[in-house]
Amino acid sequence: MASNPDRSTSSFFPPHSSSSFSSALQSDFTAMAKAFNYIPIRLDPNNYIFWKAQISAMIHAFDLQSFLNKGSTPAKFIPDPNVDEDGATVLNPEFINWMRLDQLLLGWLFSTIDNEVLAQVIRCESSVKVWMSLESLYSRQTISKSL
Image 1: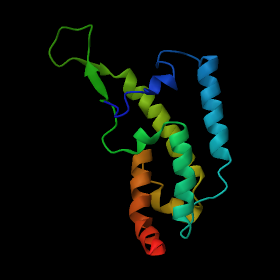
Image 2: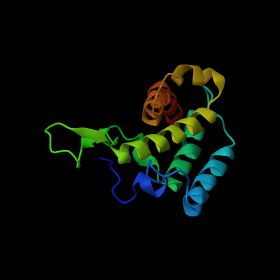
Image 3: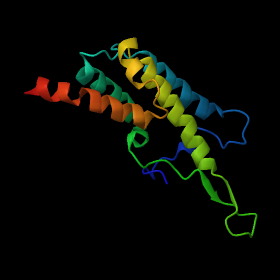
């Protein structure tokens, strides 16, 4: 299950079966999209600490930090409540909503990274994988610059 019980992904996205966003959800989505468009620094090999500070503030402002924690992914399948058979499962609606928002965050992260750095993380399929890869690539830079 998601590690942040106070705010589920359903507060950002309607259930999978819904065909459109409600006006409140659309407003949240629009605000998030606009905010990420105004991040002035694109990550390059020399500015990780500055980029991370700006991106982290935005991620926290929109309560998305749980997406950057390993193990926070909801189960993809859950027991089917309409079938009495052992082992019958259905796609978890919480997972679908989580995946939508994770992919949105992944796209935003990619959009704030220059091509040289992007080439190193482009094959990452989730926001947490990008985050951890960048941390691994640039944590030494952060440590050495802080000394």
